[in-house]
Image (cartoon, rainbow, N blue to C red; front, side, top):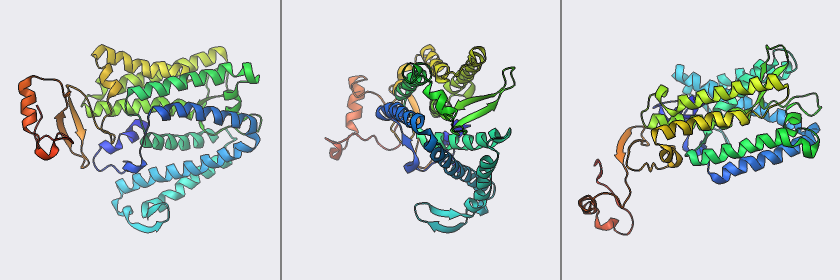
Length: 359
């Protein structure tokens, strides 16, 4: 579902498509920063949970209501175009549509339901619905440019999860990650996770942090975008393989959790499942270098060498083009290419004739 939101800009006329200034392309620095900021946040929550829990709950409610309203508004605009009518313009928000006003009611009701029923047996339903909306909008906003950044991000968070679950008790006498997830004795649980009632003999609930969904989800979304750009059927592409890898990793997590009856770092199993599946298929196809450096059409130039690729133009139409290394090809090909360069372009850039296929 998150991958569907992430690739909404590739569907012409989609009301879910993010504006260009709303999209954040991750790079190597941001990938490392995720790990550093996550560690600092965990430490703050571990030592000051008594006060921080209410900040987290407020953020969850405000962010959840906003995401639910955006999704509801988009659905109304799609099925009822008349709701696109502008009611007013709000500072820092922009146009406030009729669809926004209608969607605000159910969104606030959803959050109110979680506040009232969060400690009951049905509280998980409200929390998971809000969390699903939040994660879908996150996938829509954040994008991985290539497998190089994806590998750095997921590898860093792989060791991050292992340290804060298994190794932190050696320093803090308790597992920092597990203590924070359970609310550290405040009587509240951190809402930034999916709660799943358990049907096994051990009872209780299974908890899956937002990061365990969002981080592998960024990779899955990138691979779906890659498949779409290269016109690969879903069942034959990287998306299906990585999705299967995620489910295998999640199932393994549940099995180990039931067997050991102790908290498990889900990314320990999810990262090898998703990243491993993608690299295995890329190796079988001989496309590791292609995935490693490909930047797709998410607002960045495609530089796939020696292969045809589909690039989405700003108008939403696709154009076929080829890009090759400047030092490749025969002398005759280089001569034909040079003949196309205008005098004004010398010293600045080479421009191919509009509509030409290239050398």
